[in-house]
Image (cartoon, rainbow, N blue to C red; front, top):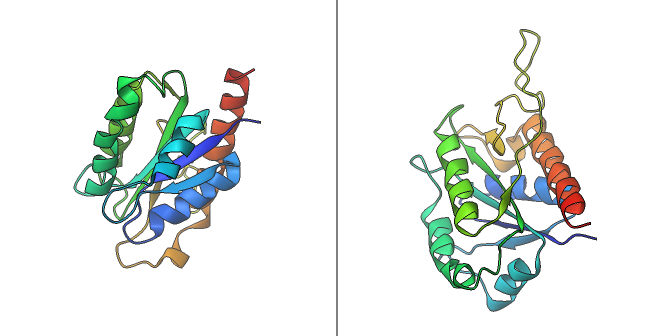
Length: 184
């Protein structure tokens, strides 16, 4: 069975809830970046042993959180030895606004993955973009590059929309399926 790691930073808990949904779909292991942007040696070992790494961060000011950026900078150690080369990569994010420049965050993850020589996987989900679509439909935010969620700035973690969380779970399933096919 493939080993999938979901490495993420969550400022207020919303991105953590998305990470849990991705992990539920992927059968993956959560690797939380701490409030100071650090991982333990054991967490780095999980990433190095994984067949796939899914990156997650809230979108703050049009990009990843500073804690995620610190982690990304520290990933230059595995980069130097090409430890993550040919692993599957993917990403997800959440912000308060419908757009919120979330795509910039996904592009950041994509660029990081390409620097490591990884193989990127998108959502593979059709958007909910008809007149009949409702805000709680799967992939209502209509992202192909990675999973996106929108949570109003005054909404609690428990108020995240089930459709956004189901999108994250289905995204996790896709990452697991691609990883299994890639690692035959």
